[in-house]
Image (tube, rainbow, N blue to C red; front, side):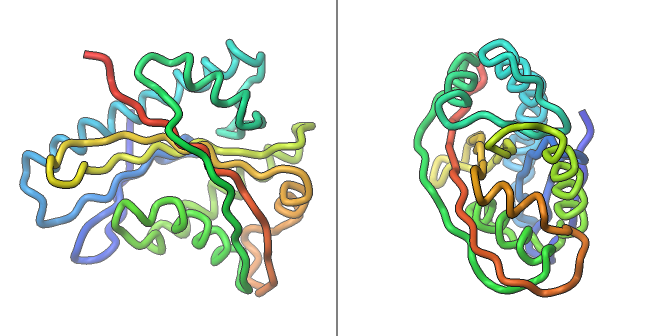
Length: 209
């Protein structure tokens, strides 16, 4: 499977999927080559999980995932994810995003809140993130559901041990937040106030030997 590398700064670079099958890793330039190779391998494995996750959703709920748009609530998504070998839920929490900015800045803030732990600023990926989110938004409008969600794969190094760790996050909005999102023009440069909540459900993945 293909992926893209987006140079952030002289400190490191983002690896990410070229589509709405979101998968991310941040590679520090000063990492030893062996660790870079281990991250790259784990990243490729995480990319391949996209089709398995979609199939698990179809098998457990009958829902077809289109353009990376998931419409499950936490319970239904967890049932699907837990049916995958090596996958297990580790936690969930609600988060709130509020402020004043352009849609691009809103999207930046959303992804930064989720990906910030990987160590890099998401700003260099703005064009990619805005484009893919706009595409998902269009798809969501054609689906009758109270929920709109997306799955993100995050690959990082475990502190001290320096071995790759793969986490999947199902982030979704529901009700009024979903209705609000569907009326945002992602490529509009006008500043506006925003205030919405989303749920982030985390799953740890360990590839079977």
